[in-house]
Length: 125
Image (cartoon, rainbow, N blue to C red; front, top):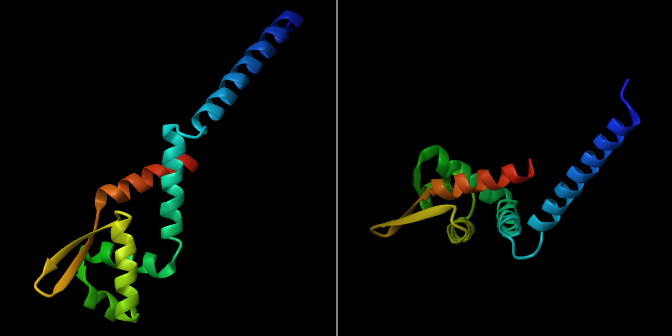
């Protein structure tokens, strides 16, 4: 049978550990900390990818490695100006790289950004 002293010691250790974890959570979520900044980046990325057309564009490009704007709007059945707008947003956020080839622009996924995004997602899962 566990003595009262043993239970008391275990309770103190439990509360001590809970206090440390609570302090760590408070500290890592304070404004200006590295985790807080990463969470803010994740929030911006999730807002950007919350648009169905942007997700469709990103999936299409990822599946084909590299596509020009004309291929993307033809495949998705979207107006060219809408596709260009979404490509610009994805490029500005760092999800895509653009390469000019004559008069057309070819886009491909930026693998480092996608890996970073996956790591940020792991923070909340």
